[in-house]
Image 1 (cartoon, rainbow, N blue to C red):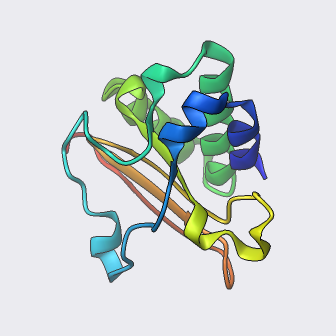
Image 2 (image 1 turned 45 degrees about the vertical axis):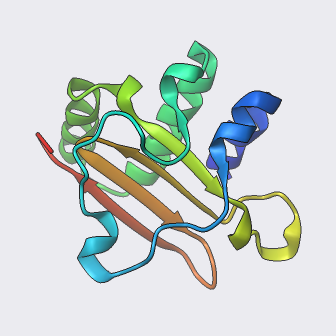
Image 3 (image 1 turned 90 degrees about the vertical axis):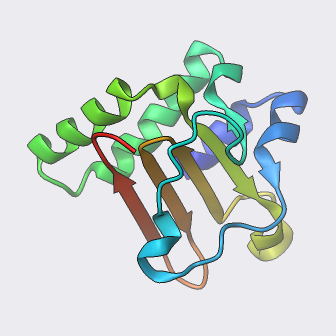
Length: 134
């Protein structure tokens, strides 16, 4: 639900950048293999977001990290911030819209040293790879 709050906060131009067709292919651990790229990643660059929109993206990450120990949550966010929060891109995938309701069931956040891929159908799968360096 929180990722859809980000979507709802986007304007028309931003949605055009963020909404893509098909998501990445799921291939075990290769699903979240790092590219090391800062630009040219799928979706909208977070540099295109306003401060309040970026804060919503941070809340998405906090929600998904909530089940982990505080020390691990803090470490993951520290690495993401250190490698450049503004280098992240966020994408939503229209070809995986269950019920064609505009509530995005598949989305991802990707940067040079992290990939966060969420698929909510037919049940929830979340792949996360956060590293100190790409």
